[in-house]
Length: 88
Image 1 (cartoon, rainbow, N blue to C red):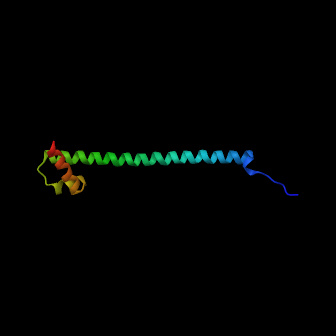
Image 2: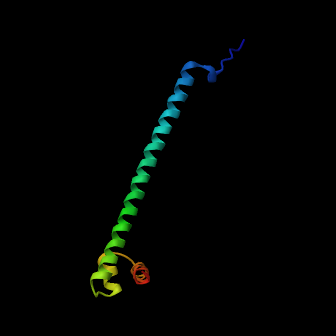
Image 3: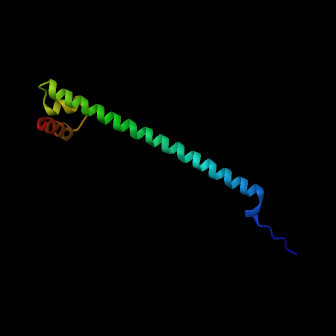
């Protein structure tokens, strides 16, 4: 006579499943925090680069190419910043 046992109703199985879900949620939150920090750093670096480029455009007579090299930005980025400053 076979014994039928429903594993899904077992107390230990349910505790293990709940713990697994809890750990999964915690890991997901941690990954989300890390990605948020990385994104924040990127945004901050971009804002800093923009401020540097704008300052160099306003305060110096350097060429756009030279400013791009100094700020480690693309020439297109510097040209866009110049156009926006001139539009003000």
